[in-house]
Length: 365
Length: 90
Image (cartoon, rainbow over all chains, first blue to last red; front, side, top):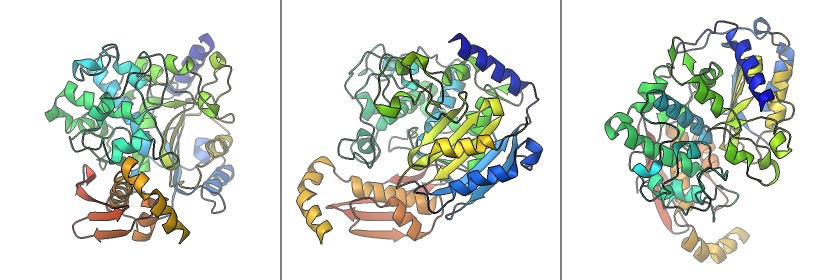
């Protein structure tokens, strides 16, 4: 734990040692070489991403280093202006919105959900749900297990009218905070709860006013359920260049230009393995797929006697990950951000290989 | 032929446990693909299709509305506006 803290502090120092240049609507552009990246090696990563012989299907890849866009490529009808679905990567925006709302003192991590959803366990807090540790019964499965999938029922059938209420009616299987279970339901319950906290009128424009506008994300679509609740689990559509701005906000500890949108402590907690995850034994590689607060992590896991999930990627990396291979990777130790969009219906891209190829192209600071 | 036979066998089971999901998924995801991401019809049909096929579909490009049917259910999704995108409407 101490090692992890020191490593986080060193990384933070290395990032803040340079004055960050924030993007406006667009990122400043640079060559790979100017940002310490070997262009030929970087090209190998792009070749892998867009290789037709591979089972994955990429349509966007974008790399940002030291706050500069060094390379991007689009295919399959996608373009720089395409508002691409990011599926579960949407969850990390929900994490950011909660960080902002906590910073505005409208709630805390300890706020209980039962104040607006009286049916749920009185102990269930915002923090439990950000950590995917509500203890509510859930089956997260898509095409692989459609008959038992509650996420499919929530998005398309029984739950689509009012997703938050659908989730609040699940059985309490574990004590809140003790058991990790990745659940799109928890994120949608969080978005329903947020509506109650900020009020219906403000909620309508809340993501824009508090997050997208400060980051100069001009063109974005966030789908809602029939009750007007943003589908926080899955349905944000945005340009890859804009998605990268979320990574930049977290890379700079919640600060955007002169404004601290999210407290640094909240960011730190978001990218550390959470207690529920550490105490839950999961099947196969899921046991190594560590989770903070609505972010996936690449942390080493001595507590579980497990290595990190992506062995060839630095252990400080964290990710927003989505269905069909959507990926935002943030690597603070290299001041590097990667966005990859795809439609991996056959097989997800090998993220360890893709990200490590890009990491290997970084030769200088 | 084999596919149809398989469908005939599992149809009652699907209707009981899995109502509307095929057409709901297709209509919503096709709508998003075509009218938000602005992709071609062929790509969007491929993207929104799953292991159980759509039996019929109607794409109203002018009104940005998609209606699809499968396993006895019909669902529509429509592009609402440039802030909230597509929603299942019926």
